[in-house]
Length: 272
Image (cartoon, rainbow, N blue to C red; front, side):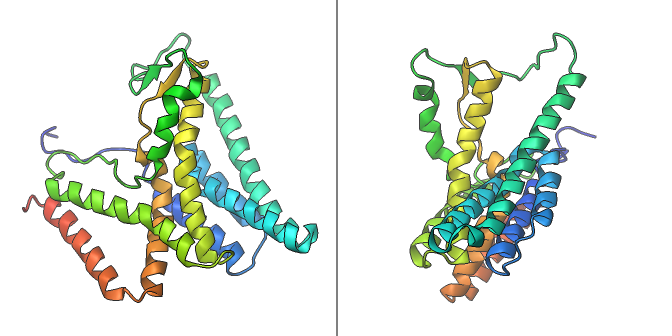
């Protein structure tokens, strides 16, 4: 196939969107329907992180939110009231840690002796020698750029796609703050907004800690890309839909989606 016209690529980032949908299901299952069984959330979490650990970001954010819910309920009504939600959150964290550890052991057993990846330091730099967080602390505020980092082959990529990505990124990053300011504390919509904010805050930290640990404390990641937060996009899109319904912006929502679809289709066919 001609490399100039090929737009195909293979990536394990794609399931991250399904991971986000699974995270929204788990959150709604507990907060809206009151179903606090731990097995289904644990199975969803295990399936996601077994494909790619960072794809479990949305589920990590949901587990943190459920922990907050449990603490609030425990403070107000006692431990017995908080226990079911606490077990769900704990099961999710346990599965994430277990799969990560098992996968690390499997990979270590398959590693070739003395092999060094040619791209191992492509996106990292040496720590300057000051306190470790001096170098990477500024990168932690870059998490609120959902959907901004993407790759499309030149035949498909266009100025329209870039403009749409910027607009979508602004909307997806803003909806969480609108939700936590608009909805009352304790509502499912409020906690959904908190989940998006928590996920956007912690993924740069997760990337930095991973690089710091894998390099024995000598390097940091220069700019954690928003592709690591792809699993948060379904949460943000769902929250945008909730806000559109709340503010009766159905026509605006339909027009926005139609505009995005038009831009993607015309760019895919080289129109414009």
